[in-house]
Every structure is written in C-alpha cells, then in structure tokens.
Image (cartoon, rainbow, N blue to C red; front, side):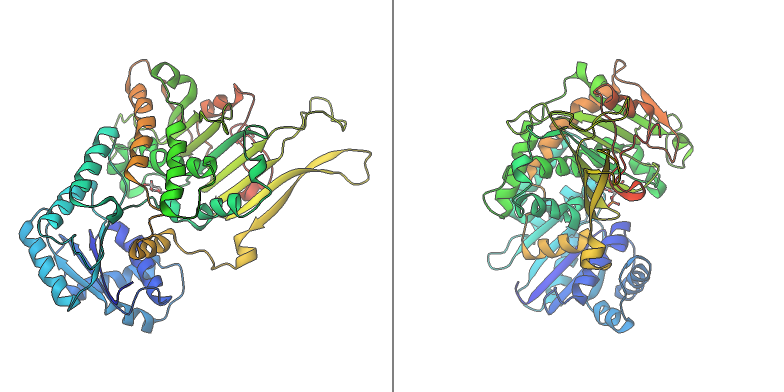
Length: 495
Ligand code: BG6
C-alpha cells in the first residue's frame, strides 16, 4: 500500500456505515492494518460537519463495536474522520468533494470509494466520479466498492454492470457479498483444499445430498419498506446462498488467486440446471410469516415471501443427481447458517437395527454462524451391547481452538482486501448475472397465476410445512447439525 489512502464513504450517515463500516475500519486501525496517513471522508445529504460526524460515529462505535477499545484509541482514530454534506446527483457537490480530498491528502494518494447508498445512486455516483476524473489515475489506485444488491433481476444487473464498466475497469470494482467475508465461509476453501481426506469423497459417488440453511430469528424490522419490494429470494438466495453453493461445489482452483477461484465458482453457477416454469412448483416453496402484512411499511396484502426453500441441481460430472436443498427465512426458530453434507449409507446393513429404523448416514455439518465450527456425525458402538450403534458427533468449534475473540467481522476483512486490491472475496459481474439468470424464472413463475401459492408459517417455527414436503417427497428431511440440537438429526417441522 502507498503511504496515503483516502476512504470515501457515500452514504456515510446511513445504517451500514454505523453498524458495519465504522466498526470494521476502526478495528483495522487498532490492528494497525491501515497505513499511517489515511483519511475517511464521509459524504451524504445530511447537513453535518466534521465534528458532528465524529460524534455520530462515536455513538455508533459505542453501540456496534463488538470488541473492547480504549477511549484514547477512539480519539486517535476519530482524528482521521471527516465529513462533507452533498447530494449524490449534484456535480457541484462532487467538485467540492474533489477539492476537499486534495486538501486532505496534500499529495498523491490511493482512493477507495465505498458506495453505501441506496442502489439507485450507484451508477450516477460512478458516472460523476468518472466525468470529473476522480476514478482515473495512472500512478495511484482508484477502487470502487459496490454494496449489494447488484440489480433486482438479470436485466437491471446487466445494465448496472455495463454502466460501471463504461467508467471503470473490472479490476477497480469490488462487489460486496458480506457472506464471503465471514471467517467460516473462507474456511470452506481451506477445509476442502488444505486437507487431503475430504476431496476424494466430495462427489456424487459418496454424497447423497447437500443442504444449506440460512435462518434468521429477526423479522424485517426497520427495513420493511425495502424488504417488501425484494423478498428473501432476491435478498438472500441470489447472492449469499448461491455463493455458498459455489464454494461447496467448485472444483479445486489452480491456485489461491482471485481469478482462479472466481473462475471455478463461475463454472458452478454456469452448471446449475435452469428451472423451467412448469417445474417451479415442484422444486420451490415460498412462505410468509403470519403478521408480516401488519408491519409498518409492508403493503396490507403483500405477496412478498419471507421464506423460501428450493431444490437445485448441478449438471456436471461431480454433482449429477446430487440435489442441493436450500432454505432461508426471517422470523424462524433460531439464527443459524449451516451447510450439511449428507453422505450415502453403507452399502449393506451389517449391524442389527431396531424394527422400523433405517440406517443412518454420515453427516458433515459446517456451521457458518453463530457457533462457527464443523461437526462430523458417525456411528459408534453403544457400550455393553452386542452390536447396537448410535450416531455420535465429532466437533470443532472456533472458540475452543482459536479463542472467543478470534473471529473478526466480515466487513473488516472485506474492507482490508478492497484497500489492498485483493478481489478474491468479491463477486465479478458475470457471477452476479448468472445468479440472476437462475433466480429470474422462479420469481416470474411465483408471480404468475399458475405459480405455487404463497404459504404461511408461524413466527418462531422452521417455516411452512410445504418446506418439509419438498424433501419428504425425495425421502429426505431437513437436518440440523449445529446449535442446540448438537448433532441430532431432526426434521424441525414435525419434531
Ligand atoms: C443481508 C440481508 O444481506 O444479510 C438481510 O439484506 C439479512 O436481510 C442479512 O438480515 C443477514 O446477514 P447475517 O450476516 O446476519 O447472516
């Protein structure tokens, strides 16, 4: 990194800056990972000045920093915070921004522009930055971080990407998917490719199916207005969940290089079997929690889904006939994100089983959050019996092996990588578009009168019963390997 760096946050008075960016940047500063001379310039419409911005950010730090810090550390960090009030579509305000930057930098500097605004401003901001020459410099780095969502469908994602690419080189663009910054998500690659024992069985010969659950306990909260126009398929599946699918399913990359990894992920997204309109009803479930429509900001007869479950297939040599079952929703029983790999049962039954009992398969559970870790479920002989077997759980927990405070916030890693120009954990244009290509037909079928109905579910449950049926018709059930059930296989809908 060069000695001077400017971080310019568009939308600096917003929620994301308060909750995520400020705590992440402050912790990077504490860890001495931002170079000596740097400034963070907030830009937003609210009429604050530097002092007010610093006070606001101090309150945000108190509320949202999950680590301990001293007031002296905060004071030192806050000296790097500046603010300029301006409009995202006003060229004069951008000229004022340019002047302020030059004044603060006092010489050549790298710049990272972070778009933490409403999506409709992404393109106008980048275009004005381009017109004023603020994102082009032969000597210094000019990077732009774009928050999600990348469009609301394939056409809008393509339009956004084309617009961005007219101003910026693809290497300058860092599209955030904060799931990729999670330590336990990064560990998926390490788990698969830094160990020799898993990869030989990571395929259709040994794996029966894969499940990915991203469950949230919270409802839509203060984001009801936004969420009601989006729904869980756009909010969670198009980005986070499909990225998890890609990491689980990808081939080993040639090396640990950003493009090598992203090429392999792209190949997975390309191999996902498209869902034709006539199949949508049999492979998808959409639900809405009871009481959602009474929430302020939600349309009284909203048809927006707050839960979805899908069966996805990947048409390639490794994964043919291995279904991936995906589910996500708000107001569910527990917050948890986990990936369960269910292996095939042994080919013969050697040990006696009680009547009506089926053989149990080995399950590998990768707990992404909140209790980050890995579980391997296998059969063991029950002591003092002739040959009775029972499933036991071999566990790894981050907190036990690396300490309670070992896991940084996803945004910390992502901000640092963007500052350093490492794009490994960021989404390329093509990946975002391929994801929409898969999602769009499902959304279209859900809108059509012949599409599957919107089902409802109780807040605090595991979603609609139809989600259970989606697996039951394939003689499978949803699995929890982490959390309270700690290794027990249960079908939460009925247990
Ligand atoms: C965001 C979604 O991308 O991810 C939110 O817009 C969701 O609706 C959030 O709550 C979940 O993130 P995490 O890190 O808490 O699992």
